[in-house]
Image (cartoon, rainbow, N blue to C red; front, top):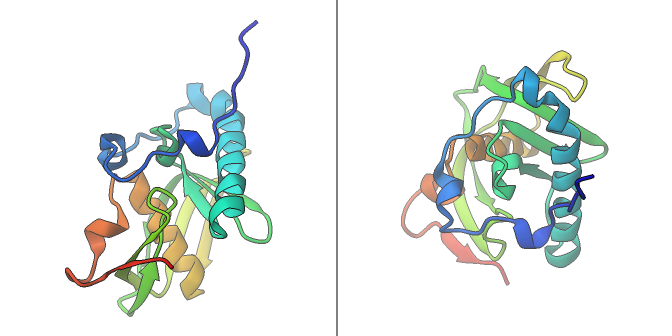
Length: 167
């Protein structure tokens, strides 16, 4: 019997780790059985980040070195987005100071779309469509989606003065 060691805060990749810059691959039918374990790892790590840093509403699988297209969000309830695709990105943009679990003390000013639509599969494999009109959720989904493509918010900084240290 193989013992399972849950991933946690010490497994979180930090700025500079080359895996953070690699695009992740879609979850295949054969890999679907691993989804529950991945979600448990994501949830556990996010709880630890919240306890230590007082932020964290979502996490993407690549942040734990799981190079799969999975986003785990926990706002009022857990939501799992498997193989998400963003569409209908609004032309209207807004500026926001973004943060990231992979560099928890750094803030980065970025431009994000005010609204979007995300198509994804939930943890049961059902196909879903979510129209997101809330700026805060739209920004969050864009941030996590970028992780799936190997893009960090540091790469989206508005300019070279758009970095600040969290006090």
